[in-house]
Image 1 (cartoon, helix red, strand yellow):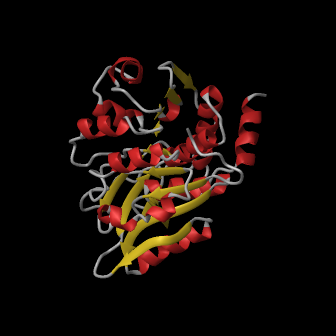
Image 2: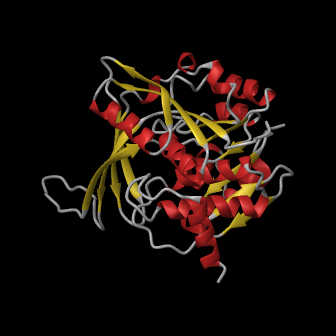
Length: 318
């Protein structure tokens, strides 16, 4: 049973931090021995975990971030951006002689490609996550399962302890650059997870099948909660506690940059879940958060608010 909330839900996000260097335009594919002009260039806060944290704060949650960064300008930039967007950074540790991670994003209105220098990204370990902080939380989330090398073997024990204490849990996998997908580790963690939030591509690499419906209806192992699958321009699907599957189509928006849309979807489904939304209402709320994210550059360029979600939903119902 989840803890009751008399005020804003307290969400602890334990995850990676990096900067995103975004190159944007209609044609951003580099060519050897050629120079090309692009439409835009931005240096912004990156990482799945951080974008989800900022979106949660924008929606109204009390968010505390736990991470490690390098003791460098990019590390200072990451913590400063988190604070600017209302996320607590008291438990972000700056490590000497380490470089903060960097992702180079080639972004078009339709999709994006990423190149990442890991740096500090895989260095978070349980020692950096204070038990006293967790005991204040209503929920713990992390992103980038495959990038967080220092935490991967510890999530199941941590999630189990939290759920026994009434604290709900969620995670997003991100892409496995090693192409191993760790199905056994994911299956073990699912038993202690309230919200599993992969993309369609990620889910079908972990559980190879003809489509999302096959995985959600027949291939998943026992799960502790719900599974929400992000399907881009086709919307999203949700496997509910009783095993039934529902779907929601996309919202009609004209995207500027899809970076962070899935992470803002994560924030929407976590926030809606903590406020008691379920079923179609929950899935539509999360989908609206993802759609709103695409209206700005970078993962935090257009963060969702409850008011903006309501406006988008009202427009869609006209």
